[in-house]
Length: 341
Image (cartoon, rainbow, N blue to C red; front, top):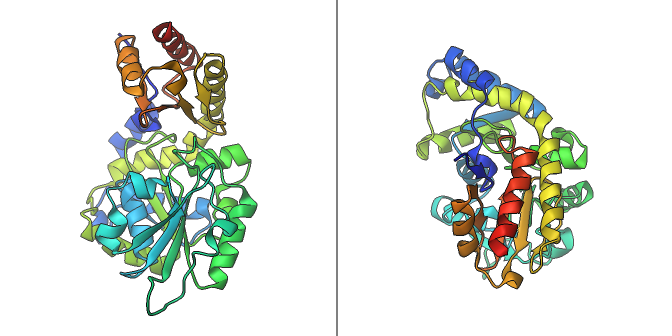
């Protein structure tokens, strides 16, 4: 049975063109800076983001960890949304590696505003931890792939910089945000200090993420990558796929977004299900009104060839990507309707 996998866009398989590029990749030792394919990927990623430099890292978690490490000092706070991936899904790396405390801010839709933040930004003082950085997540995963309005990003950056506080963007799905907003990536991230984005999610590469920012910080980040075990030697084999992901991956995102909207529309017609607004390729929906637990529904769907994860004891998530067709999205929701009777 062919599985319909809506668990995440991390499950995408490399395209035939990526596999060929990986087979033919020119390689060297990247720790010595001698892998030409990695060097090309880093230069291209920096250019797309409009930043001075870029660093190829194995994972988005490592990219976020390094990005915030080079912006902060031990004993500081980092302000982020209370449902941020940084806080809930990265094994507390901010505390473990950077020695910083998260100042979590509840938001309605995962979008921090300056009004949410301004009263929490703290200078150096005798009793409290000063603010080391602000982190924003675009798109916001657990808020259902929500996209930051550009004016909100710019205001946060302007006000934070006026107070000497840097801003890091977890842009794991930054290219989804760019597609939805109709803006180039470089415009979205123009004012943030460091940005991480994944090649291995909707862009389709088998592995890897990029950290971009000022050259001085990226040079420091390269040392942090080595400390975290991220010196991958002949990494050009992976970087070759990453280059194709950067060029070809964004062209496919509109279809993913259309499929997510289709899933949302179908779900809204099912009794007992409430769906978060859908802006990109993530659909978060509440199944508590059906009287069934997400883990029960996941198990029943798996028996019918559909993989879809629960988020907690009431929410489920479906993520579209280029390995799932419109017809398969239809079949997945048909299966859910069958399970719910």
